[in-house]
Structures are given as structure tokens and as C-alpha cells.
Length: 358
Ligand code: ATP
Image (cartoon, rainbow, N blue to C red; front, side, top):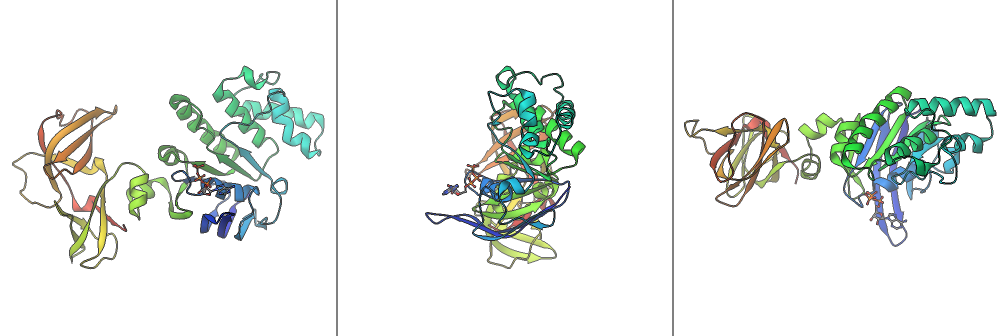
């Protein structure tokens, strides 16, 4: 198996759209890395540059230590799966899965039959070889697309929104299934999605993209708990974000004046008085306060519960303060239940507030 290395990659399309803006990424052999970001941020262009369907305007692509920047797609030994599966409708499942090996020409019929059977076992669809794609469900078709991509033993698997057209429940099943197969085969995988939940559940690391650049690259837990920018905090998971000016930096604490509220945070980045910053607090880090709790002002919000919804193991509340600020709070189910219309006070510790760049 092989790692992938992107160095100083930029891609400018004609018409001067700078789709990818000088990115670097080192993907280890066997690693599952997800490119995640909003529509148009450059995910697909990056993936297609790895696959060889796009030539970068600048930079180099290495797969398995080999410089493939100028190599055509068929010389890169990657397997690709697309959102629309792209199975050949007139071919049987067996013929679809065998396609890459047949095209390669270097395999005997026995080797191909054995490999197709092995792949159909891997995706848990043995015995479907004689069917046509339209005799399979959407989820089954996607498994066959995966089997087809893996059959020629590629060095890397490239997946462009492969689960996007499946309904929610099936998509969740396939997330688990895809990860199982990837780990079983141990193949280096680059996965593209605009779905942050999918990126968090599936990846060893995620690369959060915005306007052609990586805002942050790291394991899901780090990106969620320690976002480095306002964009990352906002795009990955739900965040309460307080924008304001630094008024004080002392003893490892930063105070930020956000107009209607003073927010205190442990210093997670270098700041000076007067800096424009954002403070991020995840909803599950808030507590409800009773009126007898301490009477500090900072990091305390009083308002009306405007919305409540049960998420199964937790409950989400939306609280609107008198100044019109909305605070989202998530609490474990069964604790401190509050009703819409109720006046409540919530607070969050400075340790659970993170100063990020705006
Ligand atoms: P989506 O999630 O919508 O697929 P994406 O993050 O994959 O978006 P890209 O498809 O890589 O984004 O597109 C990045 C930018 O490049 C966009 O502004 C897009 O309009 C532009 N772009 C993509 N392909 C071409 C092309 N062939 N010619 C010109 N511009 C393009």
C-alpha cells in the first residue's frame, strides 16, 4: 500500500477560478483522510488532481513515493467511486467488478473469477454476479462500485461523495460498512464529502477546506474540540460563537467584550488587548444554573427557552437572551428538563471556551 503526498498544489481553471490555492497534505499508507467543506471549496478538484483527471497549475502529486504529477489516470493505480456509482448498466455485476482487471489484460480468467468472488464476499454480496445493476438496491449498487474499484488492487481508493445519493439510514449503514472494508483491506483512502457528520464518523483525519485552502487538518476529536478558526468551529458540529474585542489578558485568561456579554476563556492562542477574536463554546459544555449559583456575570446567559428537541441520548435547547442572542445548549437526556417558554440561566466555564481567529 502507498501514501499520497500533495505539495504546493494549486489549480486555476480557465476563466481564472482559483479552485485550489497552494495546499500541502501528507497521507500515510492505510490512512483514511476526508476532504470536507462547503460546496465549491475545491474538494473535488483536489481529488481529481490526485486521480489525474486534472493537472495542477502548480505543485506535485506523489503516490507511493512516485511523482505522478504528469502521469495519466490509468498509470496511477487508484480506484475511484463516484456519487452516482457509474456502474455499466449493460454489464452484469461480475463483468462490472472484473472490468478493471480485464482492461489491464495481465490476469487469467481464473484469477479474475477468484478475485471477483473475493470482492463480492468482501462487500457481503456473494452470489449476485449474474445480476444487472438495475436488479440491485442503491446501497447494493454502491457496494458493487466499491468492489469494482478495489478488484485491481489499487494503491489508493478515491471516493467522491459516494454516499450522498443514499437515504439517511442507508447512508449511516454504509458509512460503517465502508470503513470496515477500508480497514480490512488496509487501503489508503481519500474521501470527499460536504457532510461534516460523515467526515467526523469515518476518518482517521479530516482536512477542512474553505475557498481552496485547508483551514485545519487533524483527527476528528481535535478538529471538533480544538478548532483553530471560526470557520472550522462553525462548519464542524454546532458551535456558539461570540465575536468581540479582547479587553484583558491575564494569568492565562482572556476576557472578550462581545457587546451584550463578557466572555472569559482560557488562552488558547496569543492575543493582545484590542484584538478582534471569536470565542467558541460547544453546546454540550453548558450547564443550567439555579439562581442560587454564584453571581458572576461573565459566561452567563439568561433568557427564554424558545425551542427544545430530543435527540435520543441528549436534549437540545435554544435559548434567546433579552439582547436577542441565541445560545444552543445540549444536555444529557433525563437531566434538568426545561420547557419552551421557561426563563433559564446557563453558563459555560472559561476552560470550555476557545479563542479562535475570526
Ligand atoms: P461541490 O461540493 O459542490 O462538488 P467542491 O468543493 O468539490 O464543490 P470543486 O468542484 O472542486 O468544489 O470546485 C471548486 C471551484 O472550481 C468552484 O468555484 C467551481 O465552480 C470551480 N470549477 C470546478 N470545475 C471547474 C471547471 N471544469 N472549470 C471551471 N471552473 C471549475
